[in-house]
Length: 255
Image (tube, rainbow, N blue to C red; front, side, top):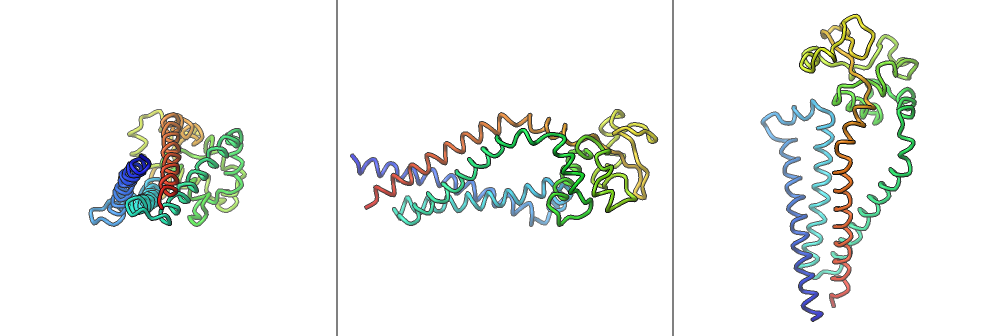
């Protein structure tokens, strides 16, 4: 009976990790195709900073799943204790990292206020410095969500950005082409001479417009997916827990 149970667990472990292996392979193939295909998808992705970051996250996740699936499949089918132990340690590391991230997010949720982000933006945002992670992240957010600052363009008053670029009122990441504004309706365009968040600026490249603050846009965006993300996180943690239990049971059952 014990041998049958071990054999059943072995094949369940193989099937489970085979799907992980296939999923990782698909993610790697999709990420590589988007980055290296000759049809222009690379240029399309590169024009959107968040998509560009997403492709590299896709490749990283695909590589991790590929390695996990390979270790699990080989360790189960060949009954290799070293591979099973390595698989268990990798899953345990991922599980503890995710758990730590969830705990930290819960503990520091009260610090993620509008005032906190405004203070950090004033202190650290540099404008064009793509080597600075904080600056490049904010540029990606403002470009993708078509917003400006935390509450609005006034967040850049008395900021590091204004010290580094005194001739500029707002960063270029805040600016959007007039055609894009027209497609969103007159309520976002505002008056060319206004002072509100929808005003337009005349620059050498043509008419631009300033978006509203990013804080509200981000809150609305994440609230849309918060329950789905929470459910997915619980499912993933449960699967990882079962994977660790199966791998240890198989490890202990191998003579």
